[in-house]
Amino acid sequence: MKIAFITSSLELGKDGVGDYTRLLAEACVRQGHECYLVSINERLLTQISKSKIAVDFVEMSLLRLPTNMPWKQRIAHAEKLLALFQPDWISLQFVPYGYQDKGIIIKLRQRLQPLLKERRLHIMFHELWIGQNTSAKLRERLVGTVQKFFILQLIKQLKPLVVHTSNSTYIALLKRNGVSASRLPLFGSISITNQNAERWLFSELQELGLNIKTEPRNHFWLFGFFGSLHPVWPAEPLFSCLYGAAIKNNRQVAIISIGRLGPGEELWQSLSKNYSSQFVFLRLGERSPLEISEFFNSIDFGIATSPYALIGKSATVAAMLEHKLPVIVNRDDFKLASCTASFQEPQSLLYKIDQIDDYLANKLNGSIRRKLPQSGLPDVTTQFIKDITLASIFYSKSS
Image (cartoon, rainbow, N blue to C red; front, side, top):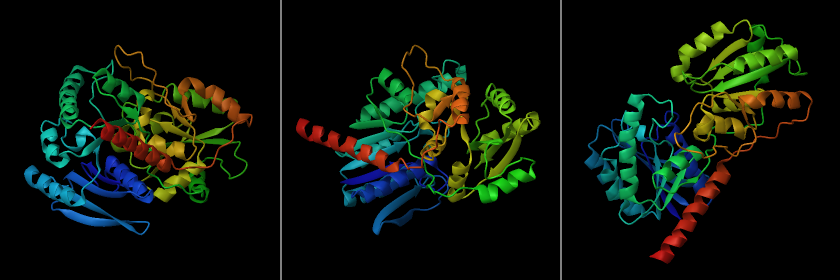
């Protein structure tokens, strides 16, 4: 099967959806399919970029088109490429903010139309419209209403045969607006190693006063944030719960951040100051994928900063779960108005704040054993191929 993946940007390490698209395309190639990657709104480029990636001795081509080139020219370049490649499917990896700063995609559907022609279309919605939380402010609701209008127009005009998204909340939102979608889970973008970070991590923690040793691990707990820390993330009631459990069980606790904090810089400074008497705080900053994997293999718990209802769209949580790291979710503040859908994501390692006491008790008595890390990419790729293959069969029979 030939699949052309289209997204806004493929800037390596700078665009989460772009990194996801690269990895999915590479995995499709490994499963015997032919893929082409096209990005049509590259903000960091000033000229066209054509390159190739070697995937297990098979070359996969990339075409990246910069924003300083008029849309008409960008689409013409992409159209010429697709005419030569002749894909069986086009997979649009969609996030509205990849095309406009406010996520308002007024003309995107008209611009994409020449690329589709009669080709079969798959859309993966990594993001939808904002303002759907019951607590959303008026301005957010207004922006979301405009975003929603143009996203639904895009779906109506482009007529995708398969629509995927990463979480049950988005499935409910799409269904409410007459769009049938199914869940394609995210996979982590961190390559898995079986090594741990103790050789370099523990020395840094010891310098900060943590009484930490490789064995036994019964005097400390390590909690980790990965990537951006949302400014609205609440430390309570989680931090008080952890401190109480630590005192009860004679543990020291370290709160560690790895990766770019993004807009959460100020919040991190506040947390490390206000809770300095209860916990040790360590900011590791940007690290290599290998070190991040080692870090996940060495800590006891991950901390999610996304709301529980949207946890399925968090690539950082996906990476933690692939490392079989239990993840604590301290937020349940995203509620859809007039919606009774259950947002239980199928992950046994996710723990809401009200489940922490039971989990810690089970871990302390030794009834929980950590499993070996395993990438979710192969299974997700298999599901992706299966879903579009079945749609192809149905489409052929109905034509």
